Length: 368
Length: 133
Image (tube, rainbow over the protein chains, first blue to last red):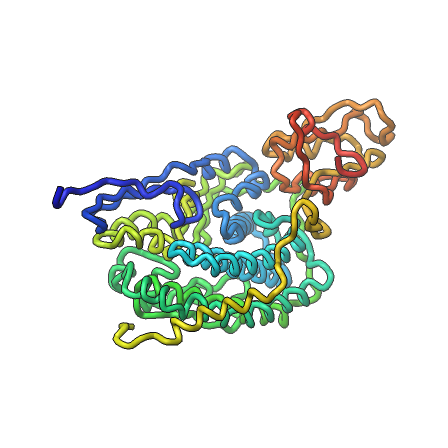
């Protein structure tokens, strides 16, 4: 029986990621010798569905591409349509969109914290972080009418104005989260168990990260300061003061610390948005009758920095009410295949879920 | 970081979670207690029949074919020439609110009622009226 490889399928249901994806593993004892990603459990054909609908009908589909953070999808879709049609949104709408993006980022990081801690058996952290995420979802419910799928960032602006006293309630929640973050440090980020499990595991070499086009925490966790909000500012990010957290380790722990830093920076951005948001200005520009947008025969690429890295949309119009082609490029494709398959070699089986979670893989993005 | 020395802080600090035992529980005791939804929540539709003009814009914009226009015999808006009002299939609806966005007289809206359970699937075909369900 010595030196005999055993094949197992890790997933499609497992604690490693939000969604269904399987990893075929060849094990020698507890050590992984070969890994291959299998997708197809969540295929809903988003890109093809979009082609068969009018622009505004497609708007309600894109948020479903990623459940943990649907808002970057809405933002990309709205900006692509606005770019093709030639709509310039008001300053107030831009600030509201930045607010939604950062609220979404905070909620996504809270969900990640639950998953990351759960993958190494820390149940308490997940209980806390999902409760705190729910507080953010309460605000989303108030703002958009929905908790998870917001369908709020609309081509031409945003769908509703802020409810009365909303910014005050958001500010109170930020106060609460600011007090709560050190408690997360105590039970999770500074936890000796987490450090022992995560330091030196799932290491990405710096040169490889640049060469292979990794994004988000995979890049910033190995010392490369790259963030679309700074490098190619959209909306009003160029008017806001924030830092890009970077750590050099390249391992799971460094990526966790990057996320911890991003939560702090999101709170900082939201505070500035609350202070600077114009009180006047249309939240929605004048739209075509019955929302029937006609896209010109042009194409466009837009990208947003999501909580997991660069999220891009390519969109082409053909002079009709329909989108000729829309392609989604999320961070999960490169992380779920190229990176994960390479990274799992010679790792322990018990580390698979933790590594997958640290990369922020979301399967619907891969099989869109 | 190497563990040449014992990480005392890392071992002790997680025990701070024990302090939570003294706090009041955050969960609600469902179904005895329920959570109220926020104003503007996207629940089941409502339709003010005296305002509805039966234009079928809502049916046209619905990407899920969840809306069909059905003739009614009840009292209706005098401007409702088609004599039809929307019927929503909640097996197909995704609560996107587009039908509400394109409603010219603003008669259609999404209400705050969001829970419906029944053994009969036909009960999920609703004629939205002045109040949900």
